[in-house]
Image 1: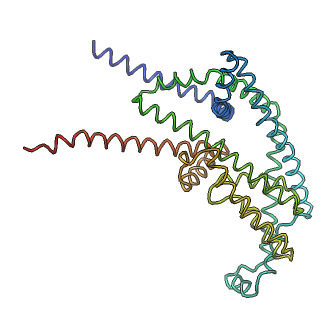
Image 2: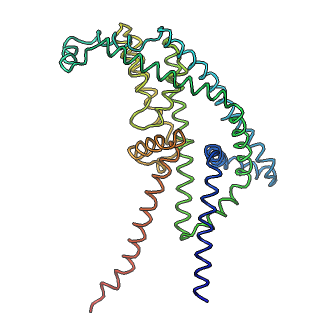
Image 3: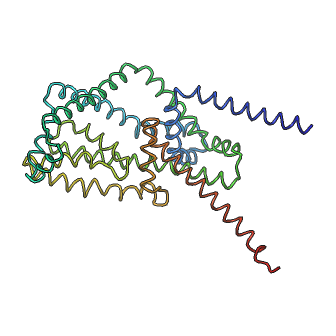
Length: 363
C-alpha cells in the first residue's frame, strides 16, 4: 500500500514536471509579451488597489482605468519615441553610406589634435596607422548602422506579429492587474517551501522587479533624455539616437552615458570648440552624472539595491544570453541567488543557536 502511494506520488510529480516544461515551450514565442505584461501589472498593482478602494470594489472598472493610465504614461510615449528613432536610424545609415557621416575622419582629427608626445607614444606601439584605423572605423560604423537599419526594416515587415503580441500583452495586463493578488496567493501556496522562506523570496522578487524597471529604467530615461537635449543644443546630428544609446548604457552601472558624451566632448576639444567641450563635460558630470544619486533613492529606496558590481555582471550576462529582457532577468536571478544563500545562512545560524545551550551544559 505504501509502495503504491509512493509510486503514484512520483508519477504525479513527473507529470507535473512534464506539463510545466510543455507549457514553457508553448509560451516561448510570447516570452517577451508575457514577461512585460506581468512586469507592467506588477508595477501598476498599487494604482489598481487604490482605484478598487475608491470605486467600491469594482475591479473590472479599476483594471480598465489602470490600463488606460498605463497606455498614456508608458505605451503611447514609447511608441512615439520608437517611430522617431527608426527615422533617425535610417537617416544615419544613409549618411554613413554617402560618406557625410565619417567616424574615421572624426577620429583622425582627434589624433592630430593630441600633443606630439602622445602621438609619438601611439606611433611607438604602431597605433598611428590613421588611414587603416579610419577605414576600419568607417567600415564598423557602416556595419552597425546597416544592422540597425535591417532590424528596423524587419520590425516594419513584422508589423502584424508585433500588433498581435502587443494586443496579447495588453489583454494579459488587464487580467494580471485585476487578479494579481489572487494569482500571487495561489502561486505562493503552491510553492513547496517554508512559509517564511516563501514570503521572503516573494518580497525580494517583487522588490527587484520594481527596482529594476521603475528605478533603473526611469533613471536611464532621464539620463538619456538630458544627454539627448544637451547634444541637440550643441548641434549634434541624430541627438535622439545618441540619447537613446545613452539611455541603454545608463542601465549599466559603472559604465553609463559617459561612453557617449565623453568622446563627443573630446572631439569638441580637439577641434577647437573648447566652450562646447567644456560645457558638455560639466553638464555630463554634474547634471547627468548625479541623476542616479538623486533619483534612485527616491524611486527605489536604498535598502533594495544590489551592489553595483553584481548588477553590472548580471545585467551584461542576462543581455548576452536572452537579449534586452536580460536587464531585468539577470539582476532578478542574482538577487534570488543571494537571497537563497542568505536564508540558508540564517537557518544554519538558528540551528547553531538552538544547539548551543545543550552543548554548553556541564557533563
